[in-house]
Length: 316
Ligand code: ACO
Image 1 (cartoon, protein in one colour):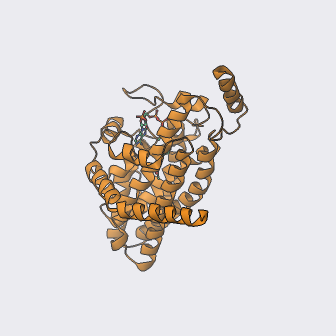
Image 2: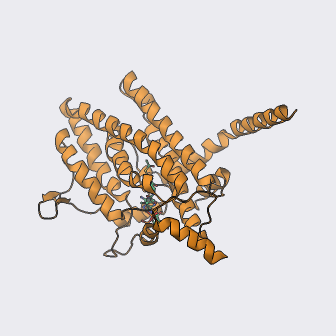
């Protein structure tokens, strides 16, 4: 019977159809999705912190309103993704517990500090730009609830990306000090943004993308990490020219033969150090997350009590 169930699953995958929560699926597929979706959800909510840092210091009311809306969008993305992960039979409480105890990860990028206002522009332009590059293909992921959540998330991310670019454009059209601030932000965020795509495909280095092959067979990933990194560089290099900023890579140049930009890889040892807890802000991010969760306990209790009361009232 288990073979028949697997056959039904593979028939859907082979036809490029969608797996829905009630369909049979191999345990390994379910586990891998929970791993990726939870990590993605955690990234969204931890990602609120570096930008939240600038809400009270945004340079104008308009910039403050935009940033506030963007950070709220990220909370929303976290919620869609936790809800989508719950369709796989794991509760949000459990996922948060795994984040807080360090059993699950969140994106390396959110362990870097936001030192100046230009960092907010750079995050929108580069980090959200990288996020879109990685997430647009996920709208075609084989797991229906994840794919559908991605549609709305990607629309919001593209607004985020444009607002970041526009904030940097304002700086690059400003004073020499503002232009220098924008360049400094690009210098610090460029390689961490390239590292967001994960380890390299080929084991040219010690570490490599362990999940890609299986995830591509299952239709979860549609492109490899290196393919997406290249797409991102190809999209971003001309935008840096528009901004009049210099991407901090001496190897970066258009390669006519390949039809792509050549570029230098990020330091993957640094990526793995940051993933394993040793980045500039890991401790601070986790401490803040755990205390925010504890501070919100009364809200969860009140909401549950209200829901329970409402349910009894409806039964009567
Ligand atoms: N930060 C933290 N961990 C990472 C990163 C990163 N940038 N890149 C790779 N890893 C981890 C993987 O989770 C995996 O670890 P695990 O086996 O303990 O789970 C390991 O490194 C090997 O990497 P891969 O084999 O490439 O793993 P995977 O196939 O899951 O690909 C990727 C990683 C591309 C991040 C994938 O999970 C993905 O597309 N996730 C959805 C997008 C996402 O999470 N974005 C978050 C940042 S964007 C934002 O929130 C705005």
